[in-house]
Length: 150
Image 1 (cartoon, rainbow, N blue to C red):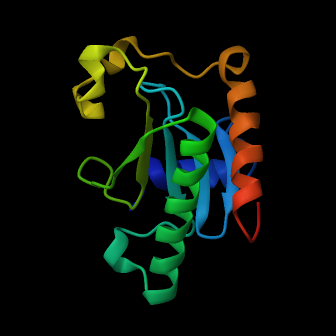
Image 2: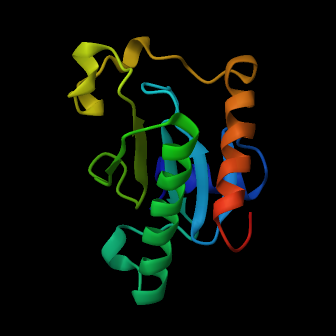
């Protein structure tokens, strides 16, 4: 099966995904597009698997450890009070985790909203001018927290 996750991981392997933040032991951290919440990222496993339960014990632990470490970096970089984590796989049936840093200074109507209730159509789309500085900032934060390939 080929999903958007499979295609994106193939681009990451070939160095052709401009939203790449870092290679982590379990896969790749990329900037979410659009940036519905500033700092929104996705963790993609490499190799791609259908879901979390398809990973064996050590691989599963590594993916979840990487997800938490990426969340720690997002919390620090954005002075977030929490990170919303989501893994569905209903639209793209391949494992991927969404990470949303949540801050107290978000607009009042957004603070308690789950990310899919926000207006994604008006969220900033990826552009090098707007997001490459953010990617570099997140890359440094992730690399300082992870052990393994970066």
